[in-house]
Image (cartoon, rainbow, N blue to C red; front, side, top):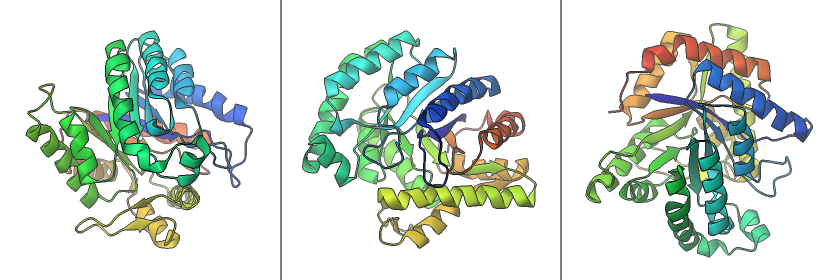
Length: 324
């Protein structure tokens, strides 16, 4: 099993205000720390036209973090491809990938907020064909330069299409394991039915809410930080449709229930409890866990402390575990 951390969104929120220069300076400090701790990847996220300055340009931010590291991979989770000119994104991604020695994981998603499509002057109804055109441009320009392509999706059909293309998929941290298991199976099935393109099964990555602690006060604080981070999703209007045994999760129409369900996915406790929880994630079909520890209100010192502990006490135990 492989490990990274995220999501760096570079926000300055109402509850945790900061100058944006601080957010970007700390991004570089965090990248250096992640590499020193031995993580494989650092993942950034993109949105547009949100009040808190949510990172609107992940590739320049990723390039800055790559410039201060030598081994760490930088991932975008997700770059909203339909809202941008595909050839421009592909050319920039190719430059970043080549300059970093192929350390760019380019995750791309469809986007879902009307205000972003309206602000960009792109009809939302065109997002699927624009995504396909963008993926073609990335395949032709960015991949030869060393970029690795990942897809973001919350539906079996979407992840199956990624599998059929031989590309990895990254799943949301709010997804309960029932949905993670279903999506991982759909991704694998899509790859198999397409004739196993590439010869090696593309990976399934999943953000998971994790916090290692034995202290009751820190446990309460970490869950409060998780809760606060999902309050932001209410403003972004994110949702997951009902799937089989997994109930719907709608941060717009039922923010209280959605937030509670998302926080309930947190794997929290001492190292043995974290290891047990990650074994369940591997059994659900996940190859690559991205610790979702960059959460609202968590100070940088707490972030570095928990990342170091996870690296020292959990990663060595889980390094040989394979997804089911």
